[in-house]
Every structure is written in structure tokens, then in C-alpha cells.
Length: 244
Image (tube, rainbow, N blue to C red; front, side):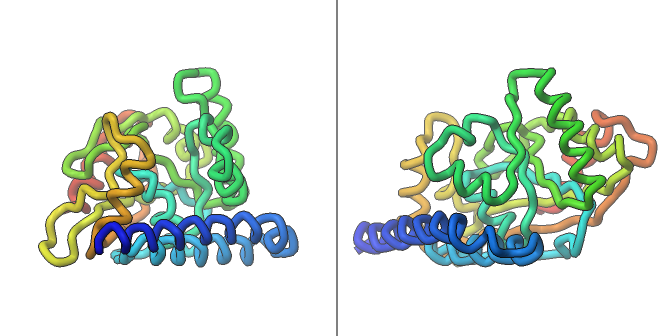
């Protein structure tokens, strides 16, 4: 029965993605920016329903920008979860821009792309992020740079925080966790780490029951004279505390 249920959920996910692509080409061009952001949020909420993941939001998402959201990273589901709480522009690795269908969805959400191995490209993205913050956008980054299993935090890379420092924009720490609603323990089903393939992670997620995505928003803060490395270390500590 578990496999049958997972297959049914997979069908719903595929149909929802196809519906999203149709919306991108037929509906979004006619919407205002605020209407577009609301539509993306609704789509993400519906995607979590297709995956049978319950969203639990603690704290207050930003009502408006400029704001840079800084979150830990566990899974490909993180982006859907964050959009479901509040539309934001993600900074993602540039290879996503070459993925069929996924790139269409990412572009519709105004994703910024970065070549992670290039310092020069990091500088380009920092300038682009700074301009987005000046324009009042809500941006989101995963400073770990890759996914962990959710039990601990990886070191935080500081480069992209320079955008917030440059324009004196606030940063809001965000802690993400996937938990089993029955036991209260960490759920590793949605994890996407190590040798996992996207398909393996997706299938585990589809097979799991009682998964909750818990999003804890912390208090927005400014740099207060800290350089990006000191700020990144402090944000890591804050997010670790929010996860407890």
C-alpha cells in the first residue's frame, strides 16, 4: 500500500508541475509583481500538499523587503518550503538554469544564479543581490553551500552576506527542519545528501508519512559593524539555537 500511495503522490506532483508550467506561460505574464508572488506561494503550498508534507511556521516571515533570508539547507524541498511561507528570490547554483522544467519554475520565481566555483562570479552576484535589496526585494540564500542531513549545521560561507552589508539591509535567520509528526524526531526522508540522487530523495519523500516541514523565523538583524565572516558565524549560531 505504501508504494501505491507513493505512486499516487508522484502522479499528483507531476500534474502539479505541469500545471505550474502552464500557469507560467499563460497566467503570470498578466499579473502584477505582488499577484505573481502570491501565485508562487499558493503553488508551493499546493506542492507540499501533493508531497504530503505539513507546513509548520513559527515566528514572522518578512512582510516586505528589503530582506535577506539566511537558512540552513537540507533538501531540494527547502525551496518549496520557503516559497510556501513567503515568496523570495533564491540564489541558486547555475546548473539549475540548465535543468529542463526545473529551470522554467526557477526562472518564474526570479531566481538568481551563481557559479559557485568562481570568485569573480560571486562578486557579480553580490552586486546583483545588492541592487535587488535596494529595489526592496526579499532574497534567500543557503550559506552552507550544500545540503546536510538536518542533524547538524555545516560551516557557513560568508561571501553573499556582503550584499546586505553593502546596502545596510537587514538579514533574517531561518531554521529549517523536517520532523516526524508522530515521534517528534528528525525525519531524514526528504534529505538530499552524499550519494543521494534526486529521484531517491523524491521517492523517499513520497513514501514517508507524517512529515512536517518546520520553519522557524528568527529576529531580523543588521550587521552592526560586523564583517561578513563574523556575521556568518553569528547567524550560524542563531540558526542552531532556533533549531532546538
